[in-house]
Length: 412
Image (cartoon, rainbow, N blue to C red; front, side):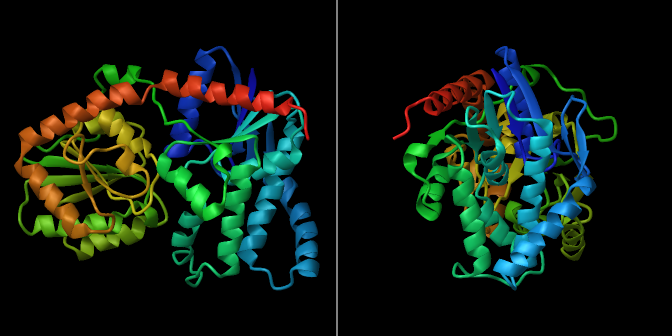
């Protein structure tokens, strides 16, 4: 098959969706399929097809689209929130860029978010199957981040909420079938956004196990402290990842013991705020900001504990990687994470945003190395069975074939 993977935000980037796309593409190509990847460029200024000679600068189309769109909005929706206008214009730009590249050559288009799914449904040909993967609840994440963007707090009766919820529903129903990785997300889409159950298929994530079998190359710029245990957290600096609560837990821990250091990898809009909070909590000697890293595998090999304090999450690859590395894990109970980690068997689970409970788990883990060794062993054993790239690829291909068959069923 000839397959186009589409994403509405820039690829590659540091984050779970980018990891998923890399792994899926690898799995599909191993099975002999021809795969292209269409997305904005990393700088966000153009659209491109990876490894192809196609680049379309956004500046060539955005002003024209914005002018026409704003005329329409001002006539039919006077006073419409500028954020909504910008979101719609961004989707129109994605649609035009995809048309310029050409979509008729593909048997399957696999959109990686609700925005690209809606866009592709509007411009693809009728013979091309459209699959959507939903990796998280963007409407809820948007709502969490609205205050951070300076937009007043909203309630579920607001226009912004209805817009976000509408995008979630349209994105999850625009294609022939929608793939989600967890039961939690399936429940959210059905209950909160009225997506029909028959439209949703659960396919857990997978990763290529081969790199995890061999020892990693130690980073050249970092040495593990000889007298301290390393606590690692890999997550973008975003409100939904819960770093603030993690730092507050570490502040309590630092008041009682100094035999640890915490490495934070990633970047994001909250980077400066989190660094300031680290200073105000007196954690400068304990918390190290490492920035974006391409050697998380090596960092995991050096770490003694892995922590993910998310306020909302689905099926984070950071947890999968930590499990494959055989690390003891401490995670929140947000979203689909509890489907990945069994409390006191493959990790420790605390209530999201409860920094006191997180501190208690950290204290216990540091005091009980043998218990942590067992947690890591059981996590790795489970991960090697469950997070198979081959299984994920075959399940995705089965969904593709289902969608193609739906394209040719008689319409009533």
